[in-house]
Length: 501
Ligand SMILES: C=CC1=C(C)c2cc3[nH]c(cc4nc(cc5[nH]c(cc1n2)c(C)c5CCC(=O)O)C(CCC(=O)O)=C4C)c(C)c3C=C
Ligand SMILES: [Fe+2]
Image 1 (cartoon, rainbow, N blue to C red):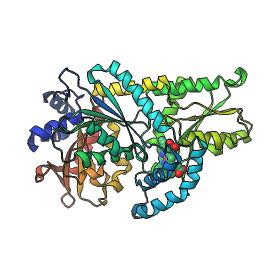
Image 2 (image 1 turned 90 degrees about the horizontal axis):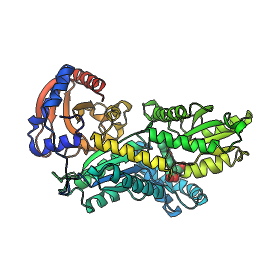
Image 3 (image 1 turned 180 degrees about the horizontal axis):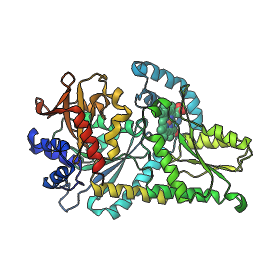
């Protein structure tokens, strides 16, 4: 079997035709030498893709843009903030979430309303997201006819259209409901954070379970584009906008303009648990500078911290102040972690940082990617290679447990005696259940995710052994193998290291 077949296909096959025993060979293979693992891949049988029409296309394909969203009008600010402060993936308030969340959001609403009023009465993110997705789908129809037609959908975490609304629309449009069909969840955060993309995926998965969890066969086959921090098209789009802005400075000063990349900050508590976002943002910055042949001095700084806790620095506003105080007044601000304009570019950077710098003629900001044709082409290229590769998600997703971001979601405490595993293609990822991704899934009747084949491993702490059980909906757990949990984890790490494409 080609590695390129999606785990979704594997899971569908396993669920619809096989007894639990048919899923077992992949796991023992982890304990085998590498050549045996590769051999096993070639034995498996390819599964034809789901087709929804009779003319040979695998389409339609739903292309679902995930993002946080923003209030389109000032009247929506209250709801936007109350959803945002209710999200424990973004702002973990523990047991006090339901009490403190509404309190903080209602206190914050008047101030934030004024900010949205001053940028034209709302966030442009919905307009840009719909435009970018529509244009990307037009390109995809041309470059990927085998998965056409591509249908654009937007799922926001805190504003309309919410994930629930998008999912219901998908079902109304003929996806799922026994017909299967393919949908790609395409995060619009280029760099992965558990607080952003992670939160959107958990929300998507929650609604998938609610709306399709009991549907059985013919549910939507999901796969995920979870990050794309150094895609050449993204890098080119940023670089082009920077070159355009640099050209506004007189030639003799141009090389000395300091490029100040600015990304939304993260609380240090999130950084310290290993969230990949800071490293991925830095990777984008370095790739852009490489493309610019390091034409200018540059720095990365962080903006928009909220509340009194420690956040990743230096703060963008402090950096600008310091450079100006030292006589460096030619500065270009480059928002590097968001793909369209929003309150942090239009209000915080333009009005606060630049407006209050006293040097609005020499401190400038590059255009956000918004309608950039280079950027929209890049989106199409990223989507095309994802569709071609038929992988469920990036390898990085399997290591999500290292940053412990599933701990809270799962609601199972750290002493839980379960290990959770998923098979991604022919790979296996596993981790203590309290760190499992899509934690809600573990509690659901149907142990199958949109992307992954799920197996559960019951871990017996006293015996330090584990029992692999394939959990089928409405079936008793069937124990199939016993093995040492340390071996299993070691094998997992070995497999992921050796079998990257
Ligand atoms: C990559 C971008 C972002 C990361 C990472 C991120 C993390 C993060 N944000 C908060 C708290 C708030 N963010 C708010 C607004 C907001 N955040 C981002 C992007 C990221 N946030 C954007 C683009 C926006 C604005 C949306 C728009 O206008 O379209 C807000 C609300 C505004 C406010 O009250 O100041 C809060 C609150 C945390 C705690 C966090 C990391 C854990
Ligand atoms: Fe934020």
